[in-house]
Length: 115
Length: 113
Image (tube, rainbow over all chains, first blue to last red; front, top):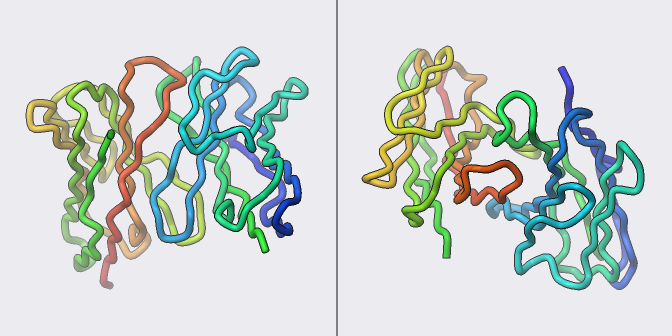
């Protein structure tokens, strides 16, 4: 069964450093998302991406964040200058248009630890 | 503010019983509703989606939606210890692909053998 994959599974970085989180969405999906979940809190939307541009973004997704689809398979989230409060699980998700297009399927996540 | 409220639990049920999980949402314009299961330290796993009022059944799971009451629920029949997890309710405002999900904080379910 197709699934979303993410690398790395765990990233440790120092405050102020840049990190890039990578995702490979389900191959026939066209819509891609990043969410984050701070430990013990709810899953929060960061950004959605379609047709090589951002469709929607939350207030969390400020100028420190960027997304890119560098090739036909990868979808990346870059955090330019990490802060302690960026420590969280970051989930990539993808959806549609085939099957049930509104349903979003999540990858296993990247645990980001900022020290 | 788009609020999705869930009772955080923990909810404990004996094996074989019916577990009932509830979710309310604040935005009357919400269009699509989803239930995810999340094991500790893992990612959300889609269980069911529901878009119109009424019940939708899939195996041991039944989702119920009442848009007038702004209420969606998930029933798990014949609960198994493997169902022990946190159940997340998610809603979207637009009936189109590509829109953000608003998640609740989740209800922790424990099924006691």
